[in-house]
Length: 413
Image (tube, rainbow, N blue to C red; front, top):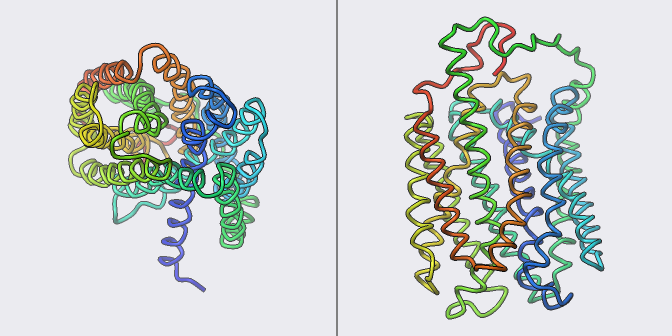
């Protein structure tokens, strides 16, 4: 039998792989639409993008019920459902024969994908010990962003070497296999959670037992967290979804195939994802305010530099703004992880991701509209403005983040 420390490390590995797969499955269609379906189905990129919208609506809306169900039933059990369910849904999506069918099946993928963030992140925060909350979230975030990059890499390769449908079939089968292995690994925890008496519900007043100053700080922090979550989600989702198409248009001199475009996108995503490790470490040392301001300032600079660039310069500047886009991801999760008590953490992360991925659903029509009428240069300027708004909002953050574990009984962030 594995020792507790070995078991914890293996569980953390499963959670990281889950984050990788979650982002991979939600972005396979972005590369398929940019590089394959426009030829096979005779539709433009702007016409195809809206068919991804139902999936991202589900990705957001179902985060809250997924988090609540995990808190009431079993987080381990919900992760088993995630691995097996999203794998089967991806396999089904590979059989789509029309835009309407693929839109409906991506909706199912979105429902299953919604499980990961509220459930997986709550488990990551619960397991964070010596490494610190910020570093644990940062490591987990790197895996998620490698999934973003791998979606472009794997899909581009399959488009050139077997067809876009395999980009759904093969990862789907892998996810089902991992889900079965994870079920074997955690079935005792699932049974124990099902039989464990649930704690009585705490008061509905989240500020019970807090001083007036603490209540004010908590309200201000909560407002900033959810506002910056919405705006930063617009930045992140616009860049990650659109980057394969941006490279298709801007890197013609250095990338002449779907495989090479996918490889370059993966390299950018992989390098940029390392920003989360740096940010995670800095969060543990310095707190979120200064770190968030620096990350948003980086985005403003590089988004404003991008319009009009081609080939190597476009690639370099894209790496710059992706460093900022990826670097911002752990910050709000860090603040929520600090504020929220463990027993409600999955539910609160569910609320956070309802906001985040609902913005993503809204971002897709925005991308289609701006690209169709004005081109990507206008999108970069819009994103620079969004990053500037984040910077201004972050200046209002309190100097200290309330610690949920130190709150009086009944007080929940």
